Length: 550
Image 1 (cartoon, helix red, strand yellow):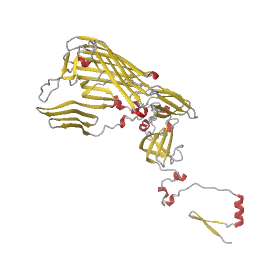
Image 2 (image 1 turned 135 degrees about the vertical axis):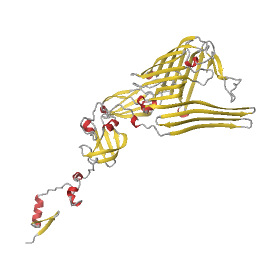
Image 3 (image 1 turned 120 degrees about the vertical axis):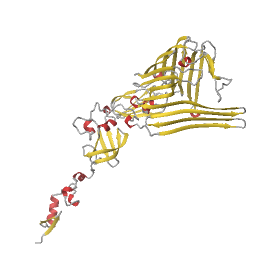
Image 4 (image 1 turned 90 degrees about the vertical axis):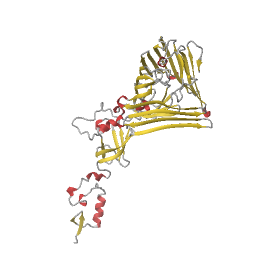
């Protein structure tokens, strides 16, 4: 009998030859198939198999080696950052596309994802914090890594997240910018046969670290038959910087006070105030809190004046949207809740605002100390202090108040504003002041201010601002008290320092005619294909005279 030798692998063996009939019978009786898993023989890589890395994880065909990969991180379908992340081998549930890898997060990165680490501690004592697996620390968290696209999708339950606004960037990631010198200028002029006239405006500055130095000045030149004049006017010099922990701005030098509560005045001194620029766009200005209840996991859409201004996904239960960014100062908010079961909720949140309204929970402050500064030669420079505070309260209510203190002047103001829903928005405040004028006479009085805003969407009409201020006979402002005389003009000066014979008409003041009532209005009307129509105007009358300014 002839023997047949079979070679399996590297080792020869001997088997008995079977006849074709026997093989056919065996195949008929055992119609089973089997398939072995892939096996990577380390002997093909090196004769010393002990020096070859463990290749068993590649036998499943789609696993990748652990290490550091640069991936795009998405949290709840929102892009977070492109970052180098360390991956470890194989936690269950990462998905077929993951390459058998699970990302490692540090406590710092988990905070950056917006996790409320106070409610969900992620760094236990004695536990390795260089590789934290989110699903192990946060119930309901899911991680899915697509190795082919290098995209890391992280799903976190709403209950585990801090209430961070859209567009929020952690302060530790802010950049002060590079050291720089800058200058902005504007030059205009005319030259004729009999006269020349030129004007140059300069805004120059230096940036170094958090500090900003600025100077604003202007140069005037005029020449004609028999006269020649040129003058440099230093409008102001100041230095400013951000105070990040307070979300505030510090200004020292020549500047102006805010105009939310008191009328704005110039000063030379220091000002510390809340800065809107340190908040994301979605938290700047006023917007109502939109509340509702979702029956299922739902898509929430908010429209204003026909435009989508907000869209998000909410979990079942009550929700409150506090980071709206409205496109205008008025226009009702149309809310649509698309439930997972196909049903839909629709309702309207009326919205109008006046300048003083603040979001619920937001507090703004403004502190100023320095010398009064106006550029008017008829006014002195008394030292004064001003402080104001504005607080956003629940139910669309805003409360505010403030004080102005100087040697010859005391004033205090209190007020409140509210979004009235279908009736628009309104604010009312009253100021009490005690003044000593240039003739040493003492006066006391009150001033009542009323502001109103409302949109009539059906007619395309928008009352952007409707205001009225009424002052009693004895009410004066800090600007009035700064005058050196009860009546007079300011004068212009030529290059030789001599007064012109004609005073500046707009600078005339007469403190015996104190301000009585002021009405102002700003209205816009949408005309469809023909554009829009805007109307703006004001009228001021006075005590002891029938004269008015319009």
